[in-house]
Image 1 (spheres, rainbow, N blue to C red):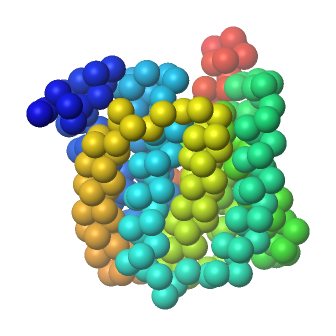
Image 2: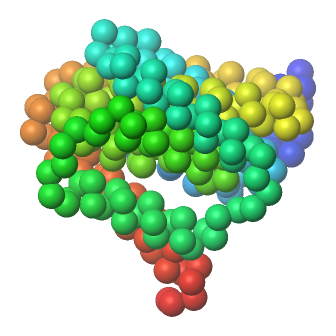
Length: 252
């Protein structure tokens, strides 16, 4: 029975680790606003085969972000979601059709620069409708190759100056849309999700428990504290991307 529930190319021990990490990373994203998705994909990259990494991570992130959206539904800014989703459709379609991968070093350094500018650069006016659509298209194109573009989306939403609950809820709903479109695209491309269904369900359930605990922390957090926390977390993730890009260029 256990063997049937555990993917053969992952194993029981790794599956248990992934379930625990899913809970921890969902807590992180619910409490701090960002960070869980990229931490989860970093752990999954070590424990699951490369060919299944991005599509399976995408399904887990749908569940994680859907749970976060559900418990914070009243705070979602739906106009942003609609515009972002329109862009995501275009970006995922382009990403699914292209056979050319963007140079990883350029991708990492570019993402890092955008995130750091959004956090520490001059205060920008809230993006107009075109910029929200463009953000959805660009990030969805990237997620077909890169997997976790949550920091990019979070940096865009940060410029909209929402409160902490609106920020986390809207970001979660955007990621549901983006990952949903990506997962559908991988299905059209022939990826078989069935062997990983039990693991995915277990990770989604543990992730929802992490979300409930994280929201408990978020509600009690001061607005200024949240803004400082998200700025620091985004900066750390951006510096990690920058370092990886420099390493890929062979400069260190």
